[in-house]
Image (cartoon, rainbow, N blue to C red):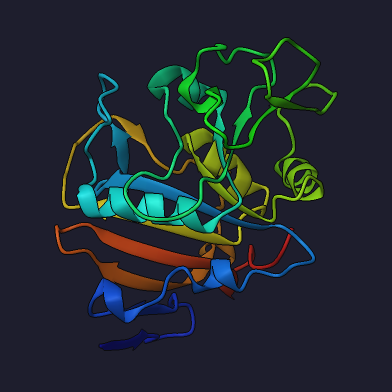
Amino acid sequence: MTPDFDSHAGAPQIKAIGRADDADVFAPLREAPCDRAYVIAQLGQSLDGRIATVSGESRYINGPAALDHLHRIRAHVDAVLVGVGTVLADDPQLTVRRCPGPAPARVVLDPAGRAPADARCLADDGARRIVVRRAPAPAPAGVEEVVMPGEGAMAPAAIVEALFRRGLRRILVEGGARTISSFIDADAVDRLHVLVAPLIIGAGRIGLELAPEPLLSRARRPATRVIPFPDGDVLFDCDLRRGRGGREGGV
């Protein structure tokens, strides 16, 4: 095992783990506090930070081990949340299929009611389904509606609190990149899993795009564990509530 990298006062706290089995990366989810929501975000990208090519192709940037990992996160949370853009672009199922475990509630952020009624994540398969909107609108049978009146982007902290009040304590923000970035910018994420594939795309959509920070002294430097997967992908397990930098802290 490699020791913490901490060569100077401004260095990030990084611990390299020899194998994925050496670290229980799901312990923070199991041990999440009961008196508030605990939010984890997951992002898969290439070495050069791309989540899609210039043509929009995004499937299979990461390998099977990363996909297994994503399904294991789903099995450890109460809800998996995506923006409506992800629903329109990818039509994801958001179910647990590659590992044992319960199916989480599926939450779609859909301010203007654009999600199609036949979206696979809204299918009635026994799991709880929720849409978050600015105003009431028709929804498929059995789909719960959370109405958050207002204008502009919905506040991530308010979304998290609304879901927590409905019994959803551990929340996975899965996509897309804009939604994940907005939650991180709002300091509404406790933990971030970035899965990096040994792939260089060269151009295309980038993963995280946050508010600019001109001072490195104020940049986020989360305590991080680095875990290699057997097929070449690498997991960066980042504790956004612990580390150095001006953005450390809670919601």
